[in-house]
Length: 432
Image 1: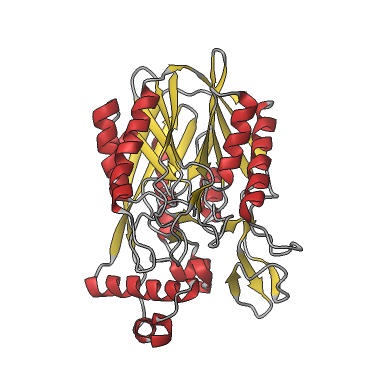
Image 2 (image 1 turned 180 degrees about the horizontal axis):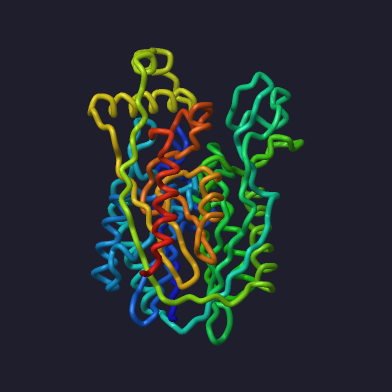
């Protein structure tokens, strides 16, 4: 097996709006550069590319454009390319809303930057062996849905809130680490762990990769300049950094640094116990899954119209008001168009005994746990917001109970399971 790594700076100019919140946040400084980081693998017969980007997400159009360029420049088939966004909320907007418009020059440049990064990685190929290890870290990520004392469920109800009764779901504490070892030492690693990259919050106006910045900095300092650390976010649609039962609020760059260094420490700990793993043959499969969209009741549709006609909400330039208007606009657009389904790509790239699963949305952690438990591969890593960005994919229970994620989701209750089933079937089929 041969592998090549490359990191490319994709930080836009200052003044571009930051993504991830319902207010306008033009970037006024670069705290740490945003990167695209590519890993190209070749077993002598097949070649694949894995690309992490410090973006809130990558939609299917962006991925399609990048894949075509990668095919032209590096000779890698589009279906053998997996591209994901780490989900940083301190990167550029890649869509348009009235409160934060997309910068078109940034958007148009990204496919070329990503393809160039892959081509550079393909030019740095060298023989490698793979090792895999599982770490455990349960101090930096928390389920953000809570059962309240009145029986309702709320998302991030506030640190120290006396109305909170109990956390309403699990986390996945696993830190999956895939080490790539060259003849002269570790060449790089893919680190898979699930937690929302919104540690900086909506008061931040600086470009940043969030806590993976500190993780990469610590690992690359420890292992040397030849080492490239790649962060692959696991399913974390209902997971973030906030511990509601703590004594004080958590957030900001100091908290990012603690989280990133904690994760890096677990990676280095795993290094001692990581075992060699078969990394050939390379294989890849992809399936388009038609997901059913939610059906809105007459009462819900009437409420959407009321929200859009409410003069107080129209004048309200804060997160809550913009979220309500945005949700109403999206829902009514679906109703008006008469759309009943929307396609989602599920992809699996196999490296011998390792299966990398790409899910194109903000996937609830329960589904990631299910896929890993039922997978027939020796090692399964689930990566969210890969090859698309279709929004929240909650469990049926969360969809019924509401909260931010349930209110935001646009798909029917069976969507998450359909994606899991597709991934598991591709893993069963493997390279045969």
